[in-house]
Image 1 (cartoon, one colour):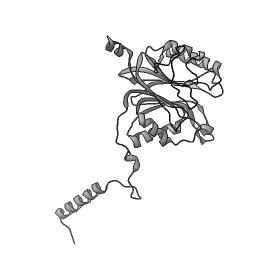
Image 2: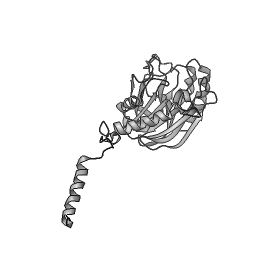
Image 3: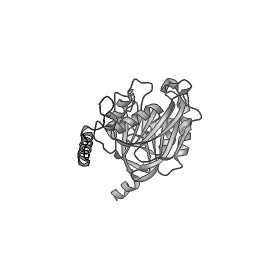
Image 4: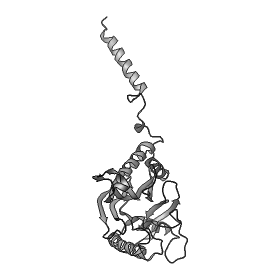
Amino acid sequence: MVLGKGTWLIVGAMIVAWMVLSGPSAPSGALDARSLPADPARDVVPNRVMTWNLCNPCETDNDDRAAEIARFAPQVIGLQEACVGDVEKIRDYLENLHGLVYHVEYGAVLQSWGRCGGAPWNPGGYGEAILSAAPMTDVVTEEYPDGGSEDRGYMEVTTEVAGRQVRLFNTHLAERRQEAVRAGQVGVLAKEVARYDRAIVIGDFNAVPDAYELTPMWKLAVDADPQCRPGTGGTCEPTTDWQSKFDYVFLRDYVAVRHRVHPNEVSDHHVLYADVNPAQEMTRGRA
């Protein structure tokens, strides 16, 4: 039987309609999960800056790490003890499961098979990473001359926070009981931070606020926690499971509108974030 032209048009329309109704399918017939976020797509919280040491090595899945970040949806987050491969997965989970889209830059200072896996001849990169909803430029990664018991360093980028271009630093200082090493590292970091009138410095400093090695940072910036200053007797909210404040959001020409510390089951460091505004805007608001 030969079908006429009109009949073929009807058949074609029916096929197209069936394809639209049935939707995309994998060979098994299952929908592609990567194209269907578990939660509705949403925006990051503007002007929210977060720091988090991921804990490595720890028995933690990257989807759990992504879910913890998505709880607070920061505009910018600095990660420490971060493997490049893990951060890639975290970023994918944030986008595909939580609808949060980030740019990413890496500050790996060490190639570590023990920390990050990979082929023995090509181990994964380990160090810092920054995720930002706004683009980042002028990326710099520096390793400290003396890392202590493990190579340590900092990274810096230029991005936008609260409508202003800012130099953003992310660092991880030497481990506990290495005060002299950290003092040298802070000296290197502070010299670089001092070049910028507007800067945000986040990271795991492995030192409490009264530690002498942090003195150069306190001369340049204030912490997001207004009650936490060296020598004031204020109460500093701990940021680790061992009840010490080691993590900071240092602000230079910014002020914190609020800050929060959230313990979690994913890492031995708590999530620390601050919602910030430019200092000049806050000054005008009080006039």
